[in-house]
Length: 115
Length: 113
Image (cartoon, rainbow over all chains, first blue to last red; front, side, top):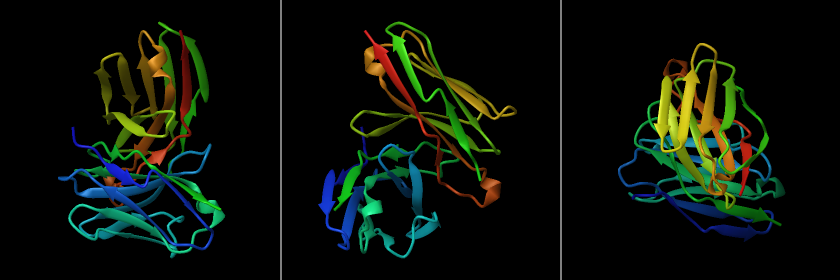
C-alpha cells in the first residue's frame, strides 16, 4: 500500500541553525501539507501546497519557513534559523484532492529538537 | 475560525466495552475526519465523512451536520485500540477553498485487558 515517508525520523539541531525536513508524498497525489505538533498540544496546520505553489499558510508559517518541491517526488520544509519553540513533531501529509473531498495520508513524522 | 472540541479528554475502559468519543465544532464544515495517533506519534486516517454514518470493522463514525456534532464509536474494545483519537474538520469550499484541517486536542483512550 502506498504511504507517505519522512526523513529524518529525529533531528537534533542547535538554535539558529537551518534544518530541512523531507517528505515523499504518495506518487499520484496533488495536495501536500505540513503540520506540526508541539509536545502535549494539538496538531496545527502550517502550510498547504498545490500546483507548485503555496495555497494557504498559517500565522505560524512566517519568513523563517519555506517549502519546496525540488523534483517530482520530494516535498521539503525548511526552517532557516531554528528557535527553541520550533521543537515539535512535524508531519507531512498528502491527498489526491482537497481535504474537503478526500482523506489526507500522513507520514510518520519528524521529531525536531532544538537545543 | 472553527473551534473543535472533543470529549472526554481521557478515557479508560475494560476490554470488550463499547466506547464513544464525541466531537463538536463551531462553524459549518465540508468534511470531518477522525484520525488515530499511535503512542509513537504516527497519525492514521480512520474516516472522512460529511453526512450520515460510516462503519469500518469495529469502528463507527456518525455526524449530525445540523447539530455540528460527530461521534466515534468502538465496539468490543481491545487493548490494541489504545491510542489518541483526533477529530479534525475542513472548512467549506465556499470560504476560499482552504484544504487545511483544523484539529481537536484528541481523546486518549486506554483499554485495559
